Image (tube, rainbow, N blue to C red; front, side):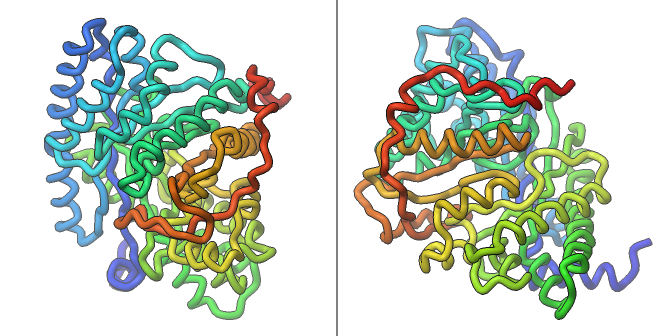
Length: 452
């Protein structure tokens, strides 16, 4: 039974500790829109998105008003567009991106994800053309997000795709250099990408998903930090218990929103993603949780251990609150989107090398990191390969979202505004992995891939 203390506690979380539901994401299958005529296919895509998502934003706003829970973004994820592009191989896939952007504008959502390709074991028809078109597509659209899965624990790592994505990231930054290189900020390279992730820029609606589904991503780093701060002097086991209990409460708020959205839109509920997603707002930082645990600053020795504790406790608390947990679920460490991470990067306590170590235990990977504009594509590919290797060997999702700051060097800053934030351009080791990257082929899957 909900008592007055629970109600007052939730109100305080919303008013003073930045509790929010970060996104309601509607997943829409476009498999029935495949057509060898790209104009007919785009017409079907636009009509289906507008038909299914016409009430998504209004419903989110209504739920937020009724329950007093901020719902920051309403988003759409669609079938990887490379699967549709395969049916019309002579046409430029950018037309699909323009259609997605037009539909997103029509229904009023913040972002649409799914300008994507799954190439972890090789390139199928449509994949190569879509990947080639990503820089142009992201430069020409405002709401479209893109992702490419280049490896899995079962398949290994497609090094030809790794080499290609280093160039694509650079080109995406170059084509949007007049807009703080925003194109690269809307592009994610994955290993072990989940099919039901509600968070951008990596959301897509996997081929194993239903025709339409509602997925919800919760947040609340500020709530967790406040709970740890109130605990005072206690041991590590007690901190883990505090985080678990707090994650349970946060997830229950997400489940309330998910259930209402599903009911009001007459769309099945899919999953709730438990991720602690920070923002640049003061008091809404994953880094500050780690510092509350006892670090002088995020990036100090002990940071990876604190993050491992946090990630595990969030998952344990969240799964008690929902039987359908999915997506990424844990703690995000996007540098430009986290006030504490920004400060730590500016002071150089937090380095790219330390961030890579942290990705072995966090939800995703090297996320929203600005790097010098002269970083060669082979170095970017090397970073992708390292991060994918961590995900492959550890059977977890890892990702890379790097923003080459064209015309700028380490120590200068990029500023995107909004949830994407801004921050310092971080130092990168420029020693070349070019010969390794250019060998191509596929890194074999580790032995655990034979588990069935």
